[in-house]
Length: 369
Image (cartoon, rainbow, N blue to C red; front, side, top):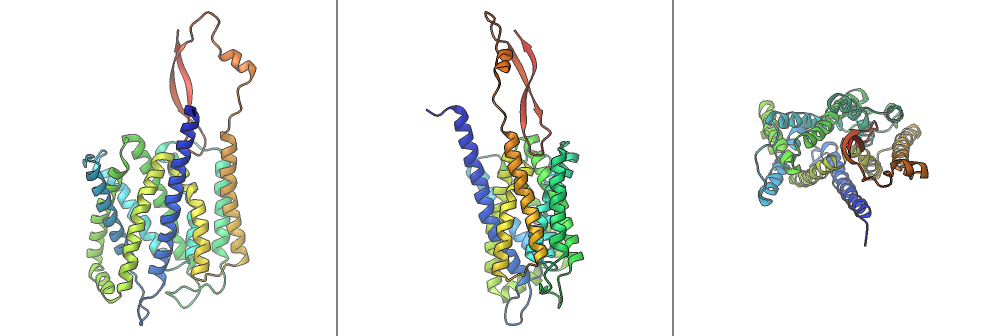
């Protein structure tokens, strides 16, 4: 018969595999589709689809409908658990995150955009310190600096023949990376604030997704109407049916990824989610280079090695530090109750550790005989 400790470890392993597999599959497909939509022209006249906010609206509309159906099917309450303005805050930053991501593809290649996302741990650490009041070790900041250096090398030394489809010349690095900086800042806030909502209100995944995406639908639709892009986007889709198929598939995988992302953040925390994304980003870069023929310069390969090497080394060292040594004989004697006396009844309290990844240690606070 398996011990409870083994059962817990197996359960956690299955949850981790479920989270990693779901994120990998949905977001790799999502990345390829968004590059196709934003960088590959449609029709004989080679027209580009430029309505990024319309993609946000379609994605959030699909996700909202699926999450509402899930709540009804599971007979869970549709009432908001947290104040509505907190859902709206996540929604606003999520819309800004996705819009910056789509718009950046007009100015930088997908590999550049994807590698820049590896710097997500930096804003997560910043927002974690501000919002969650977490403390990080010096080694965590070292990894963050190495990732930043690697990203900078990758961005500043592109291949000379990587051409932007929107301009007759090389990628517009400054404006594209400004959008990516906005993406990282908004996305870091979104995932950290989601983490706080999950822990502060003990809310269900579907509940947060439903209200967040519902607010996103209203806000993105309002933006489309005010900018006069709604009818223009519909007209483009009417003239290019293959674009409609791409948008539908994009919305489906985006909806699935939202559930996997929320599940991962709720189960493992925001910074763990950022680490899980590393392998997905590496695979996405390799597939994009093969599929869309993006050239990479030698210095870009060096930058990629620095980034992914730092992230994998960080994960490896973290696993080693989490393995605590077995207690010594002296410790066993100290912990053992005095012979003839009943063991003390200890009231315990949970103290957050100073590591970058969310962990909890049980510490004695008060003991009574």
